[in-house]
Length: 202
Length: 202
Image 1 (cartoon, chains in turn yellow, orange):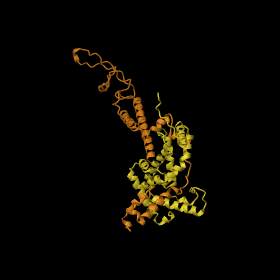
Image 2: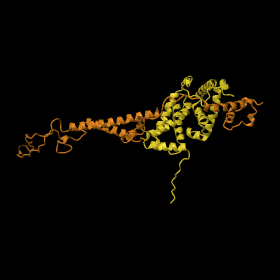
Image 3: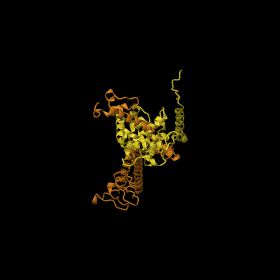
Image 4: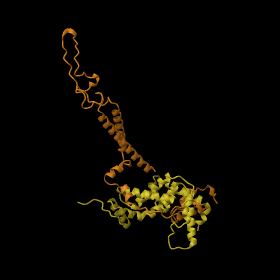
């Protein structure tokens, strides 16, 4: 008799590796789960810190997301582990957005120190680095000035590359609302950067 | 040239999408083209912008892992106050009720049945008052007619330390202790549930 059970093994080596680590973590191997943490903590932090423009709060948020993932390992039903972790992080970030109070503090005040990640590539031109740093600073300030919903939609679309349907599913709103948030968010960003658009042109 | 003020900026925002383009009505407007270009530049600048470095390592410690995925009896205790907990509240209400009822019963002496060494006559003996002493002469109801009324059966003296109508002090103390134990357990359940709920809502 034909075995009708699904024996699909992901072709993607990354996905295969992640599934093996998840299975080992479920069996009680903490090191396997921490291997997943090491693999994804930077990418998840980069996602969340744009949604929650506070370095320490973003770090706490990602930590909570990993706690939640570890606690609910048995609920993982297959597919992309990265996407699963992303969803948990986005939910945690939205919870943090709702909980935190708006404070008129400068975002990323440590921009002037060396804690910022250097730009990719071997470009060591100090002028380009300074320009890149200034561009990042004003963009971060403008991002904080728009609404949480618009910021979330823009980050998920422009940075993470999710499409409208995926963002609608993750944030629990309609497709039309997602489009509206992205478009209005970008217009709001541009309005914030009215005087500094020369940094982004050309 | 069409008046730019009458043009919907959301159309320019939609044109800034990947592969988007301005509708012909707006394509002739220089301001709309400039707006769409700026929005596209911001969309490209965002993923390339620098972010602050992750402030700490997010790997799980052994203690955190044990707390998040407890095993054995700790898993049962962890269920108290968890999202899946549907037992704690009714259990705490039941224990509180039993505790209060028990304390009331132990405080009212006549509610409880008499102690084990009390009257052999069974319930209702409390209404008789003091039993006749063994040395008493029977009451001659017939007066001078010479009829001798047989002596009333003697009733054993109740144990020392109280009237026959009161329950044994040991029974009351035991009931009081048991009631306080119920109340204490109910209180512990309520506190644990509140702590877990507060942790989830924070």
